[in-house]
Image 1 (cartoon, rainbow, N blue to C red):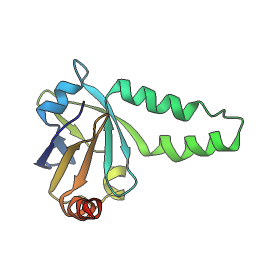
Image 2 (cartoon, helix red, strand yellow; image 1 turned 30 degrees about the vertical axis):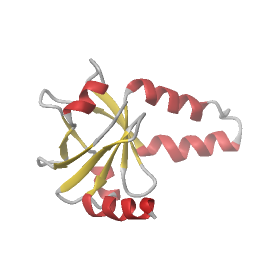
Image 3 (cartoon, one colour; image 1 turned 120 degrees about the vertical axis):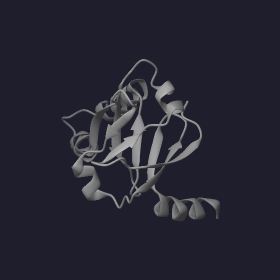
Image 4 (cartoon, helix red, strand yellow; image 1 turned 90 degrees about the vertical axis):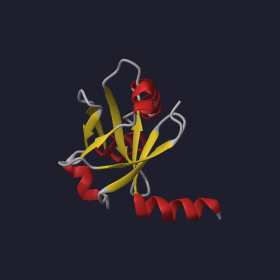
Length: 131
């Protein structure tokens, strides 16, 4: 389970270090999946939870308009990531162009996934959640 929160920095070229605790959640996997979130954040999933999520999307038949729309709204916003030997991963340039990330970000545990937030945007979101 992804728990806790960590402030981290980009280490150049859209590269982030995934916290050690979250790397442990991935087990022996060096790959995981990211998805553009709904509020300017990124969601990250281990392979098992990613499979559950994608299966729920793919259950709606492609022959139905709802099934086509769900796929087109979901899969183009997703990418597979691979950790390097130092636990870093690269955010695709297409993601960076859709986000307002600065130098510092928060990586937060959210149970079945983790989220990556711009420091300022997370502050606003947290204030909204606490109301």
